[in-house]
Image (cartoon, rainbow, N blue to C red; front, side, top):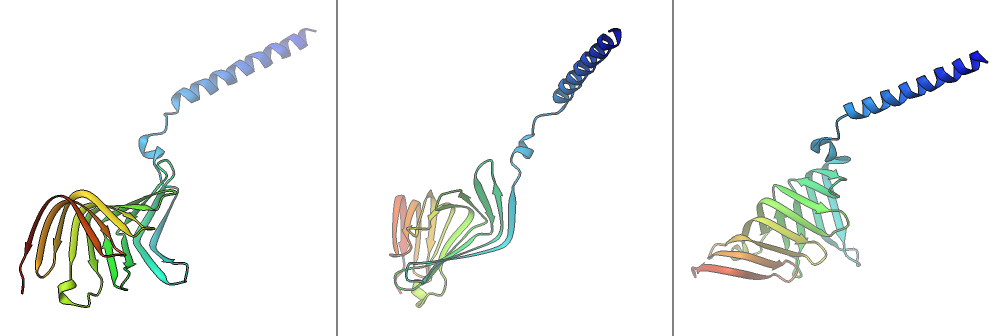
Length: 187
């Protein structure tokens, strides 16, 4: 009988010791740091994506040097994104930036840092236009680019500064929001 009590007592002491060790190790383990909490779950190098319309015609091409997906923020960060989109006249427009972010389940790409929009091969020298801004949101389904930041538009005959812009690439229509200052030099 004494052996049973002794065995029961040893089992109880061993169980309490295990609980104490478990509690001690939980207290010693630091919580996830901010950096560990935002680690990517996958990345890619040399991303190349083509989007076609319902007729099988190439509509848009997206290229990035690197892509990194972050599950905590449900977003993908692109390094060196480049987007090429055709307008209704068949002219290809190029949009590029230093970085871009795409939220999961959204069709809007947020471009940041030295954002430039220009026709790829303008048919006429007068059509050679450069649009520059620091931040731009590109809605790929509508082929619509917009910003609230300062914008500079330059071409051989025109120089425009404005704050905020909406550009419908497909229809080649640009709308400025405020503080528009334009200079036109006819040739």
